[in-house]
Length: 126
Image: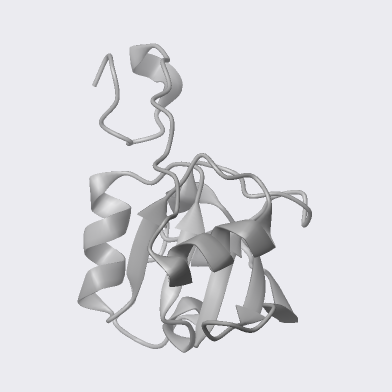
């Protein structure tokens, strides 16, 4: 199974998945250590927030996207493409994948911001 981890720094799980352009891509199965197989460093027009095409998208190649935060729009748009999107408080990519496969992935922590943050997460102020 292929996973994409939102990771603007290519080290940790990061948030605001809709605007994220960098993803660590792993192959993983239950009982095996996840293995990084690819990295996406997408142009701005391929962030899910900007992408309006009906054609293929690099995230189509994964089954699950994990991020520190993901708005309802991001989750819906990926679901329409057959990709599961989940948010987590876990910051380690391998631990996040392992937790997902075990059914024990920690939920994302709520975050606060003001109206003009523009993240689209539906959090306080939206």
